[in-house]
Length: 332
Ligand code: NDP
Image (cartoon, rainbow, N blue to C red; front, side):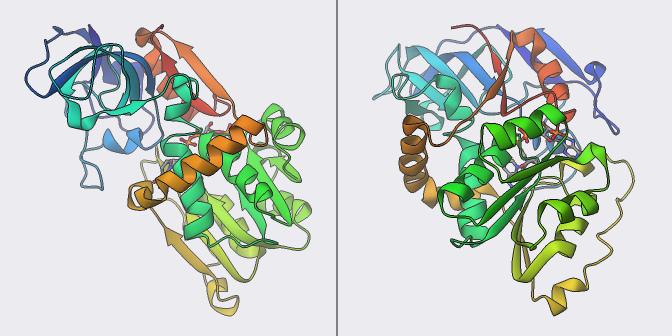
């Protein structure tokens, strides 16, 4: 089977030359292992960080080794109790066609309960990120006005809709194209949205949130964060989920210049990792899957076909070519 290797550490924006698609033998599962054929694998912004050789909350990808990430596949052979050929599993051996690994790293998923790709997006890691970040980290309360950046992406689109479903007074989103802005207001029920490429974030946010905001869910950093600090009301909260505008920066990026506002407005700013909120998983799945079934929560996916296009999918994600979760399909 084919698998993607990182072959050089990108400086700034990654390029296709930093990756290689290589053929690897398919290993039969040993005792306690499973052999899986992947059907979908995920490309996620945090993977850019793993391409750097720096100490972080996840170790860097090793050069000339298969990259990793979320994936859903079908079990072809099993040496483990409780998992049988034909079962579908969520696991972490993405970026490849076939994987053999300990069954304890696989979670069975039900292909009849939801489309398989949903376990990588709306019902998966990005969904839990939105749920935990908004409801726990940002301490969202009914009546809050919420601003979310990266609002047409996997995490952001769910943040805005959960806020609406939980009684936000106003939900504002920003995204990188007029078409995405249209999706936010016309399909996802955002009260206001703007294209951050059309003018200064500060001015566009002011127009969209004349009465200020109570929560900012940050996926982007930079001028978005500064604008949000300026617009937050007394006792406002910022959940720092991501800062994608900085992931390819080669120089330190400018700080928000208005941090002193945290004092007078008694703002709270807190970063978080989804992995620290696994305890919310059962509540998240129950609540969000009910909203998905009822049609109250909508989601989109951008599906790139073929393992050979995996790197293009990842590079496209960094450039905003996705609306909703970006996934790579390997063909059912
Ligand atoms: P998305 O589906 O939102 O895809 C990434 C999007 O980022 C692109 O579609 C693009 O949309 C936007 N983007 C790219 N560059 C910029 C830029 N310079 N300024 C503004 N927007 C930009 O990805 P996810 O939903 O998976 O992730 C969203 C954020 O959440 C990321 O920052 C990610 O790192 C973070 N995250 C954090 C987790 C945690 O545990 N803390 C877990 C999961 C995700 P556009 O067209 O709008 O520019």
